[in-house]
Image 1 (cartoon, rainbow, N blue to C red):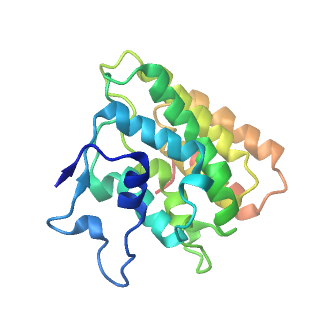
Image 2: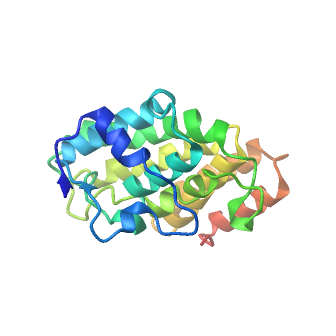
Length: 223
């Protein structure tokens, strides 16, 4: 069933209130599951509200439920790209605000809840949310299509958001930002290179493994 008229509270329950199955595919891969299919403007509004204030919105949900819910909502490998953020029917100011709000999600959720582990090294002590944090920019939906006049604005906003996340006091968040920047290096090397160089200068005493990953990201050599 297509769910098109959920309140914000009901939407949170729909996305995050599900059982997390053990050694089974998540609920959103069930053949006949309900899925959220709102107008793009409502989707962007709800995502922004969630990202800006995740502590209140996600109170009472376990980390495993949060990881599962975020994967359902924003990972294109889970439910596809619904093209909410790249919809030109949504005012550009709202799309920009949503992209900027991702930094708030990292600062208010991932920074405190992710363990200080490096996901690209598959460290065993990584927490439940670490994988979602690490893969965020790899799996996030499209921000703008090629014919969108606001594509440069949205892409610059995404890069600046990654830069903000890169300077959070969390090795997991820093790794996530480097991962994203590494994927964007090919198209935006003129912006990615100075962002990473500045990080390496400011954080010269950071974990040597993170600094090595930064150099890989600087060359676009990330998976």
